[in-house]
Image 1: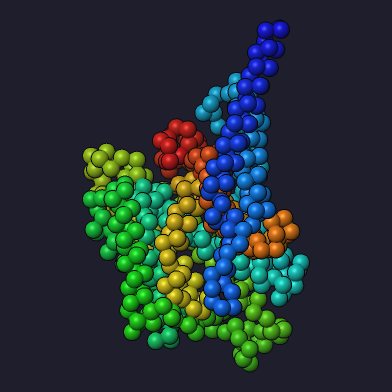
Image 2: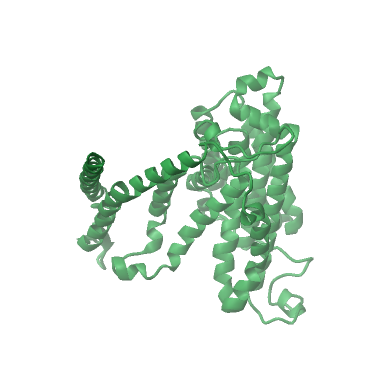
Length: 464
């Protein structure tokens, strides 16, 4: 008994010493990282001269958070997680999955869909018609656009296993197709929506042919180059795309021919409602929600079809896929085409929502964010990707509303400038604790007698 207590005390003291050491190291490391980005701020005076001044208080806060956070992780969080894991492994097998999920887990998709349908009227009831504009647009439409983009990329990356770093190119093709055709030919949103998807799918096939023999890092480089080529074409083909000035005054979507404007035949006058731009945003919310549901339905149906199983076979092992007689050429092309089609749908919707498109909206960072959402959510998991989009995009949008942070870090602190920094930190944290994404298990498309969820522990790292 005494020997055991002494051993526990020695282990505890050793853990605390290690925690102190790592906390100090984290503080010194963060000081070196943040001293130029946070400790020093540059500005411009009235004489157009560059001036700079230090922010020691804000720098001390960031260094303190890093040091104390690392100390707490090593001293308390990691030992607690280790103990919890040991107790759980002693109580049940490592790879066992609960055969009787809870009611919420069983009906999660239905509950989420009902919540999304009720979201706009609830927001309008709480904050008024005009007050709901911000919440429906920034925390509704914006998130759903990224959900649809991530689900489209999930077909290429998550199901077929083809690393695509230029997915934003199809997003741009859809947006510019809608903008140019709507302005020059006067076609409606509902005609241009499928047409933009078809044009984006065509460009997906064009991308697919040169990369049929590539995989891994080489495929990523080529797709990245394709995305940059599309962006540079949009910048330099000024006669058509108007270059960096972009295309403005893009026609809006209508509801069965009823425009959302102040005319006598507009939506508000037709239904006897007070004028507000919130009606158009609420309408767009339901449009993008319907497009997301269509994307999810098509993805689920395709996974159960032979083409979906061919995608998954290609993802796991291309050589074995060929040995089974699967045509890898058509398999890759269909993955690129269908994924690009949904990107084109999202792009045309983006153009109708914004009323303005420019090459600045389709930079490489957008592709990186969409790919990060797919990986963080769990490749192949629609639910996990949706949750990742809500957390990442909704979290970064929420920073715009956190004015109280200025009372903590000072009046000079601008929360939205640190969105990508916090986005990266969130990615690191999620990958440390959930390396296979938010949802690390998925149901197989082929099964014997009973469908059972497959744990991510059974699959290779990064494919769970």
